[in-house]
Length: 464
Ligand code: AMP
Ligand code: ZN
Image (cartoon, rainbow, N blue to C red; front, side, top):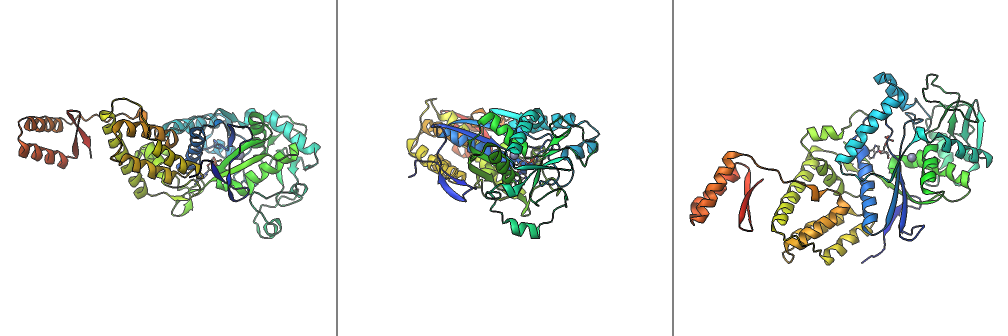
């Protein structure tokens, strides 16, 4: 049985034994949303997977410092400096100012975040509020000889950085020949990227700041390097994000951070696989995306979506379908029924099954294997050797990782008068030992969609 955390490090493509920089503590940075539109449930797959990773790290007793950014400037429609600023697109679409767009979508993002029961990061930082830190970092990169200025823009020169593309295992020669990139004649190498724009292609760019290179605004990647280092130090433990960030965004983050400090930056890279629709990544550009509100309108609860995600590993693609969600919903229904039953049977003693906690932990330590951890939960719940107190205590303990928010679940009150009336009649029939009549009433209730749960001398209706 393993007793050490093992995680898959994208940087080495290996499952490694995790060793924190500082004993007992973990510093972790996760790339946050670009607030120019709604975040869809695909984006939230990454955030929920990250939430479960962070919950797991805390569960195994690490003190975790979690930082996430909010991108409200500089992210172009193409990750490699192609296209238009996403915020500018939204401004045109909605006829609003940049900060109004950012505030509006940030607000909705955190409403969904809370509804999905994600833990708030220790620090949430907005790009537009950290321009000074970005400028200082670009100055260091420039002083170390990794940048050049062409036609007003400051570029990172990838040919100067020895390990460029190591994270993504990029073969630069192949990329150069085959890639379809908008030609920017000012770039020395295809993979060079903008650190600071001044000669904007968008003359109406609303957000601009003074800088040593002229009035302008930052490239997208520099914000994550500048803000993570500000809040976590020049070297930290884990950097997370969606798998799409490997070839460009994270590759460029590494290059510019290490060019600025002259030392290795992040120890472990963890990437979340996509949520797909018909085997294609769910994305805003393809139009076929679903938001949490839409999912709720379809009759699902936030915890149903969590259950759906937990049934896969964070490094596994999941295909969204109504069927798959219905399956997850049934599992949550089953869990709710079991939870309320245990609650009514328990004597409020907080007992825990060491055996199942060990088994559950083994799943967590195995690269946060949530399907394995879920299997332990179902096994524990159906173990006849355990009493209600132990089952309840162990379930709530596991929920520290799952994050269903079980302890706050409220039982649905049933106000179906006809059903309540039948239940009372059935109870009376039982008191009179009229078993035939009591069975008949029980079956009638089942026909109406209710089952009866008897415990501690009382009985109640539960929706089937
Ligand atoms: P964005 O707002 O586009 O910067 O994306 C926010 C986060 O969602 C990033 O970490 C992306 O990698 C991630 N992401 C985008 N689409 C998906 C998807 N279909 N499945 C999982 N994660 C995604
Ligand atoms: Zn980032």
